[in-house]
Amino acid sequence: MSKKEQRKAPVLRFKGFTDDWEQRKLGDKITRIKSYSISHGYETMHDTNTKYIHYGDIHTGKVKIINDINILPNIKDNNYIGLNKGDIVVADASEDYKGIADACLVNTDTDSNKIVAGLHTIALRPQKDTYPQYLYTYLSTDIFKHFGYKTGTGLKVFGISYKELAKFLVSFPSIKEQKEISKLISLIEKNIDLQQRKLDELIQIKEGIGQGLLNRHYRNLSIRFNQENSPWKQTKLGKITSFVNGRAFKQKELMNRGLYPVLRVGNFYTNNKWYYSNLNLSPDKYANKGDLLYTWSASFGPHVWKGPKVIYHYHIWKINFDPAVISKAYLYEFLKLDKKEILANSNGSTMIHITKKDMENKMITVPDMNEQIKIGKILEKLDLKIELNKNKLNNLKSVKQFLLQKMFM
Image (tube, rainbow, N blue to C red; front, side, top):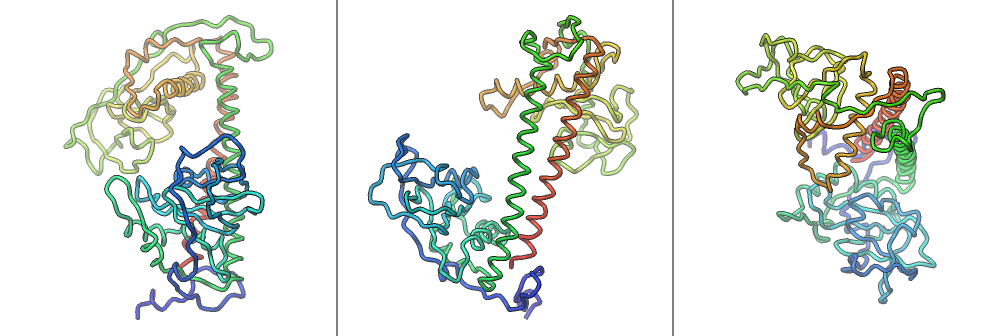
């Protein structure tokens, strides 16, 4: 027997719990409840006291733990068999493997309303020795997600059947330990939700203030600081800045080691792989800490470079400007607001083409330097608060992920 096979309990447990966990097929611990092919076409604006769960709402996160029945859409009743508090609804279809068997939990009394499992769902009712929230949480662990990847079938839409789902082996402690684990995970999730709301509110505040302070189209409706009444000057961005292209590298010029890191668009986002170069280039092909850069291919937008000296790639512009005419903080915030406007006018397109000519022809309204500095400072402070709250949110998510890995088996 391997060490893994001998283990009868997870790595992390509450004090006082020493009993071995038992492993059972999911189908042995639940009763299947009927679900129906109800889609958005069945919905009505009238209050019918009959609600339904659509698989798409599970995938988007609109429904997770359902504490408020009013978040669910109304449908006309047709003698449907309803769900009870504690029932779990699993989405049996997904457009990607990650979403296979995403689940939600009915956590509200259904005495005065009926909740029905709709299109592409599998409804499960845990037995009395299975705590519903424990099983719901188990279905979000990497253990179960890995099972979904292996079991899911399909080419464009991936699915899982009840027959396959029922074979999944779940490890169960005593009902008392199930409740303690669920209580802790629930506490972390509530803190995550609270932190997410706080972050969303800060972002909305920043956007509102930013639009009021920087909006170049509606200056007569904008916010101004006390004692600031100097006229704003409107000009083309290309008259007060220059956009310098980075170096276009051939693949053979990129090395795994070298004198200078080569900054590519992906390095600003999700790509942690770096290439290097020993090329001796003109000074305008290097970016130093504090330089204002703009990615214009695939993912686009402004960035203040915070790292060491790098050679920046062709799909990045370095923005040069006279700091006596426009402050970096003001220009950076203007470009961020401009990015939001571009996205808002893109009609959902993921391929947005930004050209140097487009950027140079953009109109920017510029106050005097004193007001620019004030605007830059207040928006920078909000950016710092947003970044701080993002870090707090990510830390909470990391704690939850750690617990899911260590408290389950």
